[in-house]
Image (cartoon, rainbow over all chains, first blue to last red; front, top):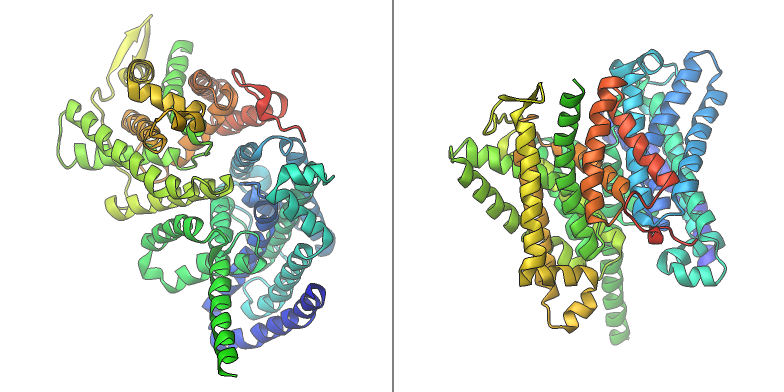
Length: 322
Length: 291
């Protein structure tokens, strides 16, 4: 039953929604808000990626902004050094993924909180290097006029580039959840001991999830360079990793839709509610606690439960009527 | 010169040790990595400087009493509002809740005290004391003395009082403690309270060295984490030694190598410890999962 539905969802519904958004958003929103949508889309990629290691793997990683930075800076520097766009982009993504492997392979043999602490330290080192290696990275001023794909500042064409990219990222994440491998991953998250007894290689799976997270961040880095055309280290402050983490918690851990909802609530909605300023993020922080307490599967899980209750009631009533 | 650098390192290290200690006490009792521990320090500094000193102009003894009272109540509130509802939830849930708490605290202090950092001269100002022929800031000595005093109080609390013994019993084996009739939920709340009080003191002590700002807790959290790893995760003496050692590594590193790369050196030490000696100085190998 499950397989045809996921094929339908990824093969028909997802492309349809993508096309619909590409048509409707430019009609509804002006240039400024369209740009915010583009920034939100990059954040969706980061959140979707982080969801692999945190939501599926049950491990806390705080290095997502570091991998984001590695993808962005490697791509930008190689392109500015004269490498053609595609190889430079691939190199950016590969750099993020391989650093992810080098960091994840040794630390993931340790218990949960060790990855959190190692990635925290790593994120900080990367941030310091971005600021201090000013000959290479431009230091605090960053890098300007990076060619990218020549669409920086053009909100509508960028939307047409980013929407399909995010749709692919979303599709990969959903396809993974419903694949046999995804089920094994859930098995080890829910009961590591039992999964291990059943022959699931936990350590290799965790490393794989971590590398996938880093890869998404690398892609997001390249996309971000193309969107903005410049880079500054403050975007990649390791604290923004907390933002990505809270996005997937509020949206719903382990849910691809949750990553999308979380990114919208963290990036797009505050832009609409600007007058609230710090109060919005104070409330957001509180919401993280309340959601973890009351609905551990986030807003998406909450919505799903409400929907089930509603449809069940309607179904019961129609049975009673017949 | 070396003495001055080492004293500066020890003083900062003592602050790291206080944060690390609060962090480890919570970890040992409820197995929660409290990502908001540094923000407890920040809150203590804002309450102490923003309300007690700047608004009330209170004398030192009153400043300390007010910080102890406020932070203890705050610690109990965190135990009741954040930890207790999640006591049966997976570890990831509790840890993320502490991240939410951190975000909440950082934005709330800006709402209450405004975005401008606060300045606090401290009880000894910028006075210096000559020690073995070297001029050393009095504040550094005050911090070290305060660390010693707090450790003595903690020893007395944990060993000499029935509450302290019940707290230790809860940390050792909560199930057995409950069977012995110890109200473990209250002991957990007491641990959060004491841990917040330590953080509050750290805030009051570190405030004269920096401006008091909403994000000051972030770096302190990080350094305290690094200290606990270095000293051995879960070890109380490890948190102390790790904190002091980290402070000295940081100050000598930034003087002799590069001040820009001080944090890189500190976190390089952290990652190297994780890779080569994950149990730290005092820790046990139990931390390494057999996977």
